[in-house]
Each structure stands twice: as structure tokens, then as C-alpha cells.
Image 1 (cartoon, rainbow, N blue to C red):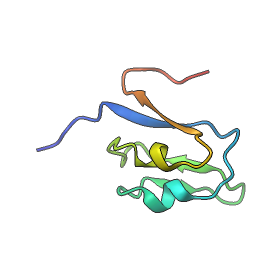
Image 2 (tube, rainbow, N blue to C red):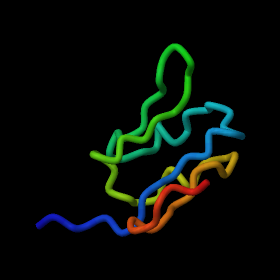
Image 3 (cartoon, rainbow, N blue to C red):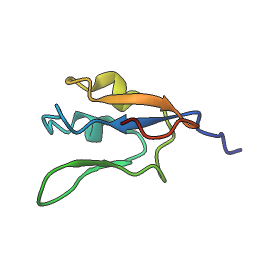
Length: 73
């Protein structure tokens, strides 16, 4: 049985220190670090919306938003 995701992570790159804690803790392996610029990328095709990345981000730059919300400005 497939469960619909109700929330998704949204990364605010400003303030991210690229510690990669989110990448290491993601149980879905949905977060990668893009080379060569180094920005973090969340692949929503694999994300189940568990919120682990947002809960453990030391800089607080990942927030969980409702799936039906658009991108924040």
C-alpha cells in the first residue's frame, strides 16, 4: 500500500553550511550534494516526507511545508 505524502521538505539555501547532516540522515536517500557548486538538492521523487532532514538540520534551513502549498518566496 502506498501512502500519500502530506508534507515535503523545502530547503532555503541561504544559511546552509553544507554540513550534509540531512543527506546522511535521509532514510530515502533523497538528498544529494550537487557538484561542483556544492548546493544540496532534495529529489522529491524519492522523498516520503518524514521530516527527519528538517528536524535535525543544525542551521534550521529545511522546513516542512504542506504538499498543496506552492514554493515560498
